[in-house]
Image 1 (cartoon, protein in one colour):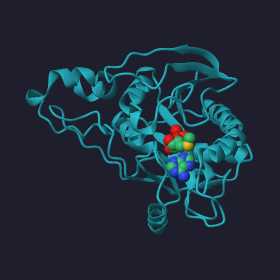
Image 2 (cartoon, protein in one colour):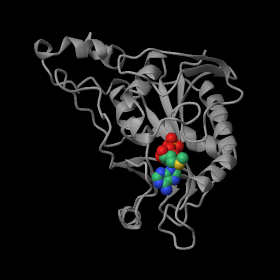
Image 3 (cartoon, protein in one colour):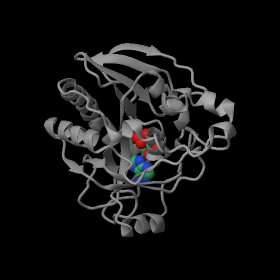
Length: 288
Ligand SMILES: CSC[C@H]1O[C@H](OP(=O)(O)O)[C@H](O)[C@@H]1O
Ligand SMILES: Nc1ncnc2[nH]cnc12
């Protein structure tokens, strides 16, 4: 049996993975309600755990996603690595709708979300200088190429609070910063995955040109849904391809697996025991 357990967080348009044999099951989390049950399944002998980010039926808005519970339930399910699949707006002419981008960096402009598992009574600081896992990125990029997607490896995803789309001035500002794509969901998800010692990568499917491109109208959900429908089959195919690939290679340790080793700064006697308990799945490795 493979030593990888691939967690897949499906974004807009991705609420199931056909061909994944398994069951929906609820996992309780001390961090509250996850977006949905997890679908715990197997694809050609590779375990894959799927979680729809906005819930089945897409009833959860970006600011209301409980990122801590989502990452906690994936960790409790035994996931070793997390692949996010997201719809994004393009901030570059050379990244047209339909294109896939394996982002490697983020600018986090969100402000109304719980961003850490740690806090009063248990303070920890992890590095997110490199917020995505190079190994998982490379595997995801390779899988995207193998299924025939147009894919760009690398790029910065600016994460906005939403739910409204950007103003023209904002869109132009993000372009001047050199950002490649824009979305509302990958933060704090990527930071929380790092705190949970889970390597994280994100495949972004371009659905629109946001509002900066004069040759295209400003983004609307109807246009996003249209592109998403065309893309979601590809995304599902990509997950199957990735599962097939990781099954054949041993999962060697990643430095991300142990990134909490030097992150906790609160002395044992000053720790809030309730918070320590809450952190059992996320940080039990270094707290017990
Ligand atoms: C339905 S368009 C806007 C919505 O789609 C993206 O979410 P996800 O990353 O889960 O695909 C975007 O960030 C917005 O939340
Ligand atoms: N233009 C856009 N802005 C923010 N989130 C998006 N998701 C898809 N397109 C988007």
